[in-house]
Image 1 (cartoon, rainbow, N blue to C red):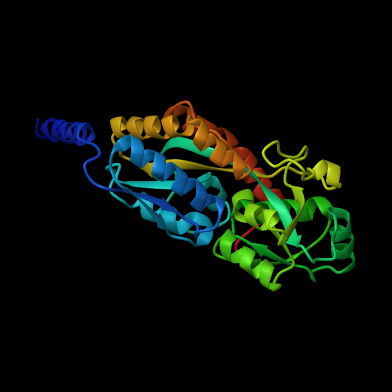
Image 2: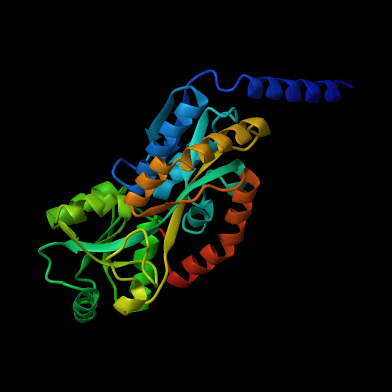
Amino acid sequence: MRAFAAAALILFSAAAAAQGYPNKPIRLVVGYPPGGSGDFTTRLIADELQKDLGTTVIVENKPGAGGSIASEFVAKSAPDGYTILNQGNHAIARNLYKNLGYDQKDFIPVCRVAVGTTILVVKTDAPFRNLKELVDYARANPGKLFSASAGFGSAPHLASVAFESAAGIKFTTIQYKGGGPASLSLLAGDTQVMFATSPTVTGFIKGGRMRPLVVSMRKGSPSIPGIPGTEEAGAPFDSTFWFGLYVPAGTPAEIVKRLHAAAAKGLAKQEVRDKILLQGMDPAPSASPEAFAAEIAAEVPAIERSIRESGAKVE
């Protein structure tokens, strides 16, 4: 009887919390520093959540370990809807890192935000005018091209590994804590090549400081016209990424639904969609939290196979 009463009290408390939600500021955590697609999508969706929920949404950047530091922080936070994570598929980190302090079961998926591809860029004054010239140099000089990476397990890291395998070349990869620091290393000449998410380098490309050589999709990307796809460039492979919202396991279902509705409403606005498209990404809100969870689960086998075949790992 006491157990039943306790369970009823917990359910009543959760329902009451959901009914009054939100009544204080919300933290939206991202595992990457300012300057990349993770930060861009986080700040964009934070603004939309804030408008719809009527409360302050504070963005917190907790970079490191391919987003794992931020993921663990959110996984161990109170399941009350006031700490949210913007991250990709947790299967990536699970297959790259040992002894993670969290697992997919520690989260409830809420809503996917956007899908994107990566771009291989070099400095504008680099001697490589196209991908063939870069590949020819890399084959003749294995390991002599230094590649800037946004961190182990990041979309640019996995794209670079896939490209090296497809082209039969090998870079010397330098890991940074996000796309912003990696971009600065390329511009400074400390590295010579870089795969990056579109929001990270679009401004540098438009400003004439970086030259794009290829996007990491076989047929190219409609969101990033004018840059050849990998098939046209002669090293066919596909590598895309996405960001989406999660809350800690145990968060009341009504809060999850409320957050999904707010995110989907914001992503349906044309001005928001235009901002995402300008960054070379595609807005991709999930139909429901359940649909998002199913989409995540469906792509896990492909992620595991891709990482296993690529040989990518944290050393």
